[in-house]
Image (cartoon, rainbow, N blue to C red):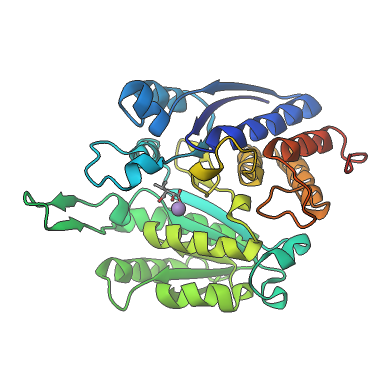
Length: 360
Ligand code: IPM
Ligand code: MN
């Protein structure tokens, strides 16, 4: 298969972790005789520095003309404490999601057996956890009308959803549940928010089209607690944009590190794959960033193109690296200093030689 892949490494540790995914993808291309062609473009703070815009027109054009986008990370502390910054790196990612119509963000959360002791949560509570979060990505409060009064003393962000926006992601979530354990939980705040009541109504109605899927509902505050108390109760979680952002970072604690959480953002036409972590500016250039979230995002990309065996090879490589504790400091147990690049090297070797790769 021939795939054109746009690389948007972005800010902070983004370039370092993306480089390791590219290595894994190149090894897959060689082993399975595919042609993957990579082209890079700037996004985020680096793009602001270069062009003044967090999403230059050329970058967007490249994304629209490729088969898939591999995204690194976005954000730079110099903007975080400047509420008056005229442009912000994050706008680049939000505009990209909107322009490509990436309405569904899929975030798998899993407790690896070899990492049960890496989580601050009790092992017996998290063992076996396997959740797929479906986060709506192009609506809600992120994209609603924003206001700031002239005197700067009043601000608002509107949370709005239409039936269509809810239905299109809910269909994906119901179908995903069918491929898994047939359970779908809608997370909302329907006791308070009108927009949440619409989610509940629409999803309840759709339930009759999926009678084999067990549907239940949780308020987001309770869901935040349940995720920590008893994550094993969840299969597929469906939720709106901001709730999904928050509970997925929370859920990463189950796996032991946010450096493991990958995601796929899909729409009618385009697809983008990105780790859920941020740009971790303190870690930039130190070789301590965990590349697994990016590498597993690349695996999700392969799945998206039905390259299941190839995706599985990457996942097997990741499992093996975790079993052997070939991990960056966020997870490392034996105190070995293993760098971002060394984790990537191991995964590359395993892809090429799954039966022989061991700690070397
Ligand atoms: C994420 C990030 C983004 C979001 C930021 C960088 C805009 O936190 O992908 O989860 O809030 O969606
Ligand atoms: Mn987030």
